[in-house]
Length: 221
Image (cartoon, rainbow, N blue to C red; front, side):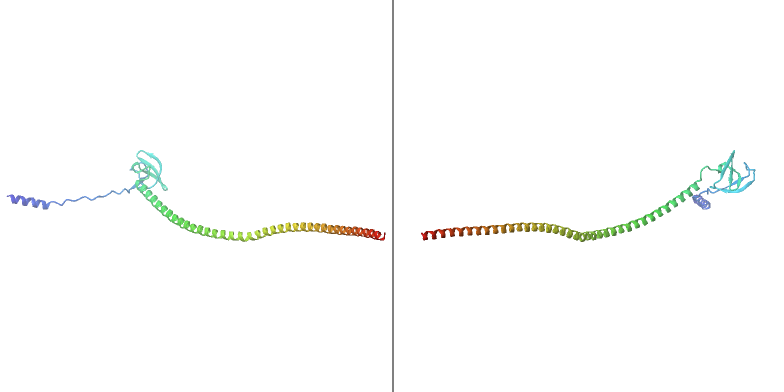
């Protein structure tokens, strides 16, 4: 009896359907709203469906209906389908576009930065070359200054020598003048000495003559 009861339960379990496990799903938020000729469902449809997220121009309100203009058509749609702000899908789309634009801008900026860094490195190389050239030109300028300074120094030395020569010539002229004066003095002294000697000789001669005359007179006596 017990075995029959277990067999019945087993058969019942086999006949029951297997449990179904639910999978996740989402309802699409893309809808199409009909636009009617008047504020009510009894009016004819002038546009079969305006896609959600479409921008329209608000013209007024009548109860639960909104008077709008879409393109070159005017009509009414239920207020529940109108949003004063862009939908989440539009905001997400705009955010995605802004992100893509920002990413593109960042890429452009990185590229420009790389170009600027390359230009900076090139300018650094040019600056180094200019510094080297400036150093070389400075050395050349120093050499030219030294070369140019030699004639100046020679001219200055020549001027000093000319001044010293002029002074020496002046001193020489002065010495010559003094020598001439000394010669004149010596000549005068010689003449005076000669005249003195002649006078002394004449006086001596006279004295001798007078003595000899006296002696003769004494001998005569």
